[in-house]
Image (cartoon, rainbow, N blue to C red; front, top):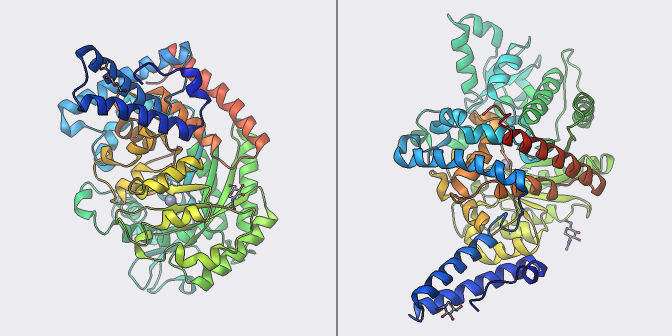
Length: 523
Ligand SMILES: *[C@@H]1O[C@H](CO)[C@@H](O)[C@H](O)[C@H]1NC(C)=O
Ligand SMILES: *[C@@H]1O[C@H](CO)[C@@H](O)[C@H](O)[C@H]1NC(C)=O
Ligand SMILES: [Zn+2]
């Protein structure tokens, strides 16, 4: 049993068998050691056999790096080791363990981060449209569009709108024009700061506001919602969304958004329900013409999970219609909102089972810390419902049978570490269960969920925590490259689209690697 694995034989095994094999092989070495049978030389041999077994099992464990990639990896690892050792010496600068709100300024200056920003990242597969664009841009552009009004709803939450009669759309108080309100401030900059707080969760002391964060988070979707139904704002916003992703070296998106919306314009005219999709397709086409190396997007339709069963059924019916009309654009369905408030997937079973067989599910599941609750079991139902990917899957680590099923069925888990931290599932990111998923080679992709609501942008900050906090210290380009390639592999691109995506990715990747090796990057 202690002789070295035959690599060819190993590669021919299916993935699941590989892991079982490595596990049992490792176990044998440990059992022997425990029984005191091991000679000093044998101890070393078995020790490195165990290390190898874990490294082989790890995400990227079998990836081969060519000479240029190996050189780029050395450069990356130098940055990474420097940052880790600096953090080890000075806890206040330990970005890997710090809350994003405390770490962001350090991350912005970090070489690892600059490397990741410039690295082609493939596809972004977990992103919600309303929260995708940086709040700074929303303030600087949308809040300066003529006609924006602000009022409060019955719960006292600010609602923004461009409608002539916002009372019908959630306003409870009188409304004021944002331009007038801004003028009444001595300093418009102060007003803009106040305004940005309406759509951004940042706080210098996240430890103090940690508990109510979900309420504020949900409120922000209400604050911005009707702004994005205003056609001029809808267009500008989604164009900026594509810009921010593209500038972060993302080449394709699967965007989650609520589709049951009625766009309106400056003349008080309202549009049919499918107008939002038509607008998005036009924006996407124009963006692709300007940026031939951007491959576009597809839409995952979302519905609030707090809805009644009847309303869920109506939403599913509406999704069916859009899916039939735009089969390669509106590709999937998902439920959104805090899982812990109840309304489990199981309770929506009668509605979810009505989905047509071509519809794919991309269910948020297990975004919780409450082991054994109905929320926690959403992962189980997501699997029984044949979900294509799992959003977050934070609780999956506690369910070994489900974890094995996810691996055996090759279902990707969409990691969004910063989201989990800001929404208070985890404080020190080194404790994020994604570390286990990487160690066990669970199929993973990285997404950024709602970056605009917490001062992030694109997907690079989530990659930063993934490689600095979730992956082991010695992990570099092999893990990164695997995650990037996974983003295409687990996407819903069709065969021809996928092979084009891989071709483009190969080109972008080798050009990036060559620039890194030549020292021709902005790091
Ligand atoms: C290492 O582990 C094996 C079991 O896999 C055990 O039989 C052997 O005694 C150990 N190696 C040595 C040389 O002690
Ligand atoms: C599950 O979904 C896949 C596509 O993701 C499909 O090929 C398969 O037939 C589905 N299985 C069942 C049992 O519906
Ligand atoms: Zn999400």
